[in-house]
Image (cartoon, rainbow, N blue to C red; front, top):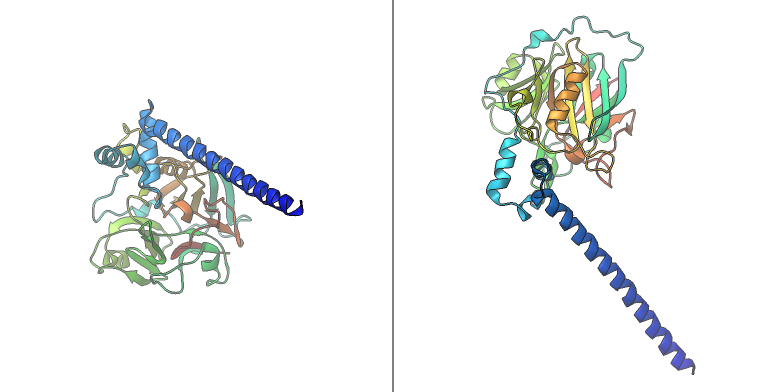
Length: 349
C-alpha cells in the first residue's frame, strides 16, 4: 500500500509539473502572438504616421534594428529612414559665437544649478540649467580601449568637486557587441586632443566649449577647433546625435512638411547654451509606459523653449542619464541601470 501511494504521489507531481509547464507555454505563446499582432498593426495598419514613427524608433535600438524588416521590404524601410534624417550642416560650418555673451555671467546666484521636470506629449525628463558655463567640461574614463566604460556617476569620481553630469558622445556599438570605453571620431578634454581616429585635417561633427566658455557646434577639423580655442569637445554621429539648434534656429525647420522628420521616439540627451551663457542639459526618458521617448524634433523645440541659442544631441537610448549629487535623477531604460560610456559632460560645484 505504501509503495502504491509513493508511485501515485510521484505520478501526481509529474502531472502537476507538466500541467504548469503547459500553462506557461500557452501563456508565452499568447504573449508572442499578441506582440506580433501589435507590431503587424503598427507597421501594416491604417495609420501611416504610426509606421513612419516606429521604423526610426526601432532602428535606433541597437538590438532591435531588424524588427521593421519583418513587416516591410528594404526599400520601404530605407525610404522612411531617409525622410526622418536630421539636416547635416556643410563642411566648415560652425555656430556664431558672437550670439553668446559670457562676460556677465551671474556667479553669485543662490541657485547656480537649477533642476526642472520637463514633459511633452510622449515623454518626461529632467532639465538642468547651469548659470556659470566655466563649470561645465568634458570628463572621460581613465583609458580609451576596446572594453567597458563607466556610468556617469563613476566618471565623476575621477574629478573631485563635480556634482552633476550627463552622458557624452558616441562609442563603438555594433549591436551584437559594444566597446563603451572606445569613443568614435575625436575627443578634446581640457585643451588636449585625447582621441582622434583619423587626422587633424579630417572634418568631424563636433560640439563643446571654447576657452571663452561659449558652446559651439560645427562640422570642422581638429585643427580648426584648436584655432578657435576649443577647450572641450566631443564627436557624435550625425544620425544619432545631430545638431538641434544653431544660432537660435531649429534645424528641423528646414523641412517643415515632413511629419516623420526627427527620428523615432526614444530616450535622448542634449546639451546647449543660452545667450546669457547659461548651459542647458536635458535628458528625456523613453521606452517606458509613462514616457515613450522624444524625437529629435521634440528635443530641439524643448531646448528652444528654455532659451537655447545652440544645442546638440548626445548619445541616447540606454546611455541617457543625468546625475546630481551622486544620484541618477532620471529613469534610464535599463533593468541594470544606465549604460557605461567613454565620455560625460560634468559640472563642478
